Image (cartoon, rainbow, N blue to C red):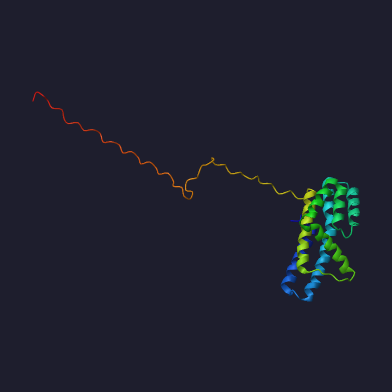
Length: 210
């Protein structure tokens, strides 16, 4: 889950809007298409806010200098329409390895394509051009944007990584051993308890003097 409250609030409102549009308009309803375009613009705004809020939150954990925080905020606020490459370049400016790790993350599961699509279609919609965007597609791409924000927050140490639970390897059985109860294998019968022999009863001794 996104930790920054402003980003989380905006992302939740986008999800709520998508759910309302799905429940209200049919697939072939023109209003559904208009809603998809509106959601795309909101997703673009989510990405623009993310590239600023995440790294400003990170800087605040590294320094208490008001001038440094103000400079970083101003620098990041000038980044508009952040596509996948702009996100990578920004991460690289903070730490070179961050840029490489982010590049690998974006290339997986078509995240880079999703981010670029949101920014590109937002530009087309804002300039009155046709767009092939659908509610189903922007719903999927919004989830990719959320994944990106969470990754950035984890990379900046704003989210603790999930603990890794070690796998417990099963104890190997002896080679050739077949567990009791396996199909076709009869369980060994318990040996009957040996009955104790009754004590020997001797006849009474005969007195020879009688």
